[in-house]
Image (cartoon, rainbow, N blue to C red):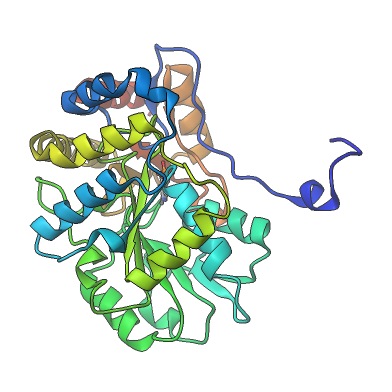
Length: 363
Ligand SMILES: *Cc1c(COP(=O)(O)O)cnc(C)c1O
């Protein structure tokens, strides 16, 4: 604290990211990173870009990456133009821009009470009025609860930290009823939601029919590039124009040359992507089964993590017991309804086995 801070800074309540421990030996299942390293083609692309050209600013529009993303989704039959794509320094930055630019309205922003905790932080930062809408008793988002006047709607699909997926038909039902405000679907985990080849039922398939829909995604999870910071949004051209106005009032060059080259390579290497999603999904199913044999109850997960609890054990003591054995998972503690849940990132086969062994000594 300092007397040079403004009142505003005194009152901020920042996001607290999951721990990034300095010790290598830990089995790190706490921040939903990909268990495998990124595509070797991504590493090659970064090497090829690392030369004298780093002297020069990158393309402020990240045009090659936007084109690669548009091509990728057009290849899936969604007909996305480069002008419908926005990219930023992680999807957190993309989210920050759209909170600032689109959600400062007269009516409150709506999002679930149990969801990505950064939403509340952005509301504090940009002084946005919001209503946290309770999840239903099965910890699902109920479409009916969002059918009321609002200054915008945002939720992750699959939701975090529950991992639960809302079917695209429900998203479309909400879009049909909610035409007067912006709807943002945060698809950080959508690639783990469908068949083993990845991709899932993305709401990007709806953006050409609903001009108030923005879909955000990240390369941090399913493309294993959390360390590079690349996020994106896809939507109607006019929404993307708005995001560009905000970005160009903040930082003209959010993506550096290495990130742009790596992002292009990541979208081009379909084979690595499919294999990676396949492995995570198979391991998720294995882990869920093993946990269930030990009395854990897990929510159905469409993501790269499991949200699970054990009726006879407190969440806090399980998290602590695992940590003592070198395994870190995420335990939120609040609100009360999820205090006994753990959010466990799906790791490699070896890491998942280590988790199960550690639980066997604890239970
Ligand atoms: C991880 C995550 C993000 C942020 O991703 P970055 O691109 O790494 O900033 C956004 N939303 C949700 C729900 C996430 O879990």
